Image (cartoon, rainbow over all chains, first blue to last red; front, top):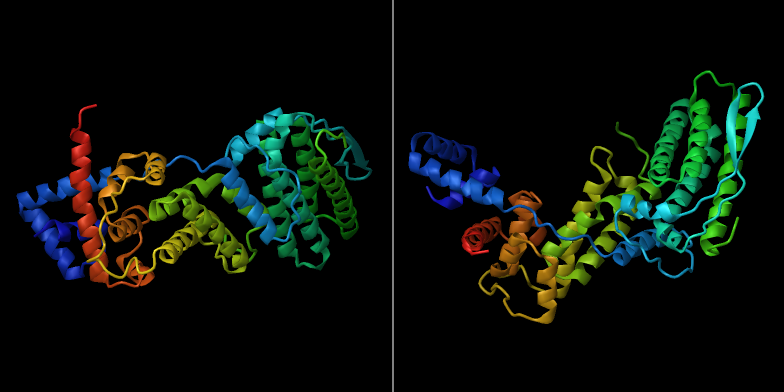
Length: 240
Length: 174
């Protein structure tokens, strides 16, 4: 029995059932075959995946931009950001330098005590903030898609509504965690406040009137934040 | 949970940010060329985006894109080296040292990747698809449009060469 057959046995591919049985018998009865197979396994397991470094940040940025173009999103004409890291979380880590000043106005919905945030100010004040474009873009996409989803909410079935809101909540949490990890607590607070409203919106006992009121408020808030983010990315250093 | 909802742009962006290093690494191992690997990932993303409604949520989005990227890398290789998979007889390792190649080797700064230098194109591609990407022999045969026995022979030769090469590397003094 040669090593080629043992190689196919190792990969569990390319041998018929009877051939596999023949190899198994040989391994059980022939010590020299078993020894050669052990050596083969050891060598193959040593041929581990190469630890290739991360792709350059500008390359990753091009992939993001290509996707945006494909999705029909108008990308900003700003120069390519000097991203310092390729991964999302590391990309987000750059936002540690992002000074986000957020004033949160609070509207208390009288009967339900549901908190809806109003973002009054969002300032990107650091040059390093340019490195946060991936995060900001992702947040914009999340908000746009959430707006879109919420717009179609009344026409959906109950189960579709719940699924849609749960998806929005899941995405929202992702951005909330990213903001928290980068000391953008004020931004995280806004996103947390969105979640409270979304959770209420998904509740079984909500009346159609309350649902419509919350939906309208959320749409308004998302739109406000989106407008500010869009203005901000096209005009760095500008207080919005 | 299975869902008919196609992946969102945000999910695509998240996948790029978290997993594009793996897609790129797989494409680079197949093409051994940074530009081709970058193009392969870009094509894969656009293709996946355009086909997102076909995405089955039984798989993970990044895994789905990974597979598309590997296919795109193979297409890049075919496009740039027509007939590359057609003949094993003419398939010899390219050991020419050029600045570009040196750069690629630096990018592939791993013992296994360095050992790839002793492999021919077909041997390397078949080995990468089988051993690292864990494709079935039939899938490799279909994708490369070569006989399954040719795939097997390429893998056998690759394994033999790599075992010798890796033992040599391990035996070298530090």
